[in-house]
Length: 50
Image (cartoon, rainbow, N blue to C red; front, top):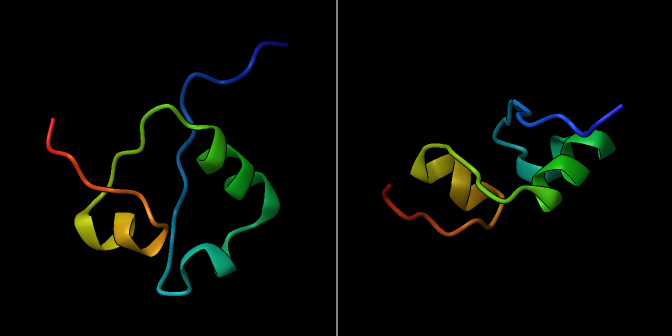
């Protein structure tokens, strides 16, 4: 089975500490991450407007 082309991850105020391992791995492997500035800051992803 091929890797999914899209993964949706819900994040809370706990940031990465509240994410299960599968979500963390998907986030670390992502080429592109979309989200609000606050959510991106929680996981340490720099924001860039597309």
